[in-house]
Length: 202
Image 1 (cartoon, rainbow, N blue to C red):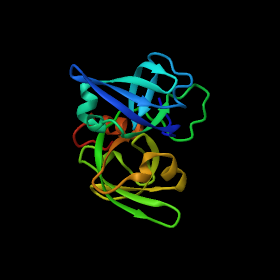
Image 2: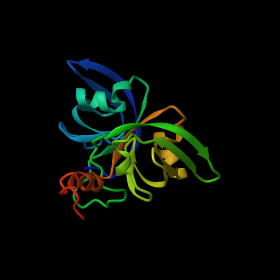
Image 3: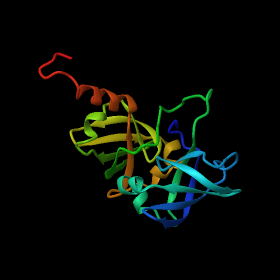
Image 4: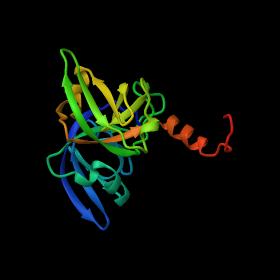
């Protein structure tokens, strides 16, 4: 489990095909301070398992499912990556509960800079649109955010200066694609509704 509060921005230094999946090497400093084999690390919102590490890097396995349904399929050498270690019991939950399970990718439709913040509008596919609510939580590229405005097939978030400077979101431009993880509770509510009796009042 993660909180969506990014600890550092690392850099992908190598992507090596391995069967149907891949091995991804990431240059980092903070998240490798106490890393162990098998630890979970969120890389741009994708929960990955570390299989090798050193003083300034770690290597993680990426499954075919992840490559097919997230931006991991387009990762390459030199791409910056939002990094977060898994939360520990007793940590403050400053963001929200994040699993690192990407629901879909979204296209950046517009970036509107303001005097103190930037507003990012992005697309919502029909599958995830019902799971995104005004003032609700969601995760973009691993960053915990609050939805500031919403339409049928789009949503907006407002990025404060700290988010713009401390994550990769400050470099977004129209046409970019982002990993999206919706709120875990919303997912379960939608699933439960599938089992309501036809014509029921629930």
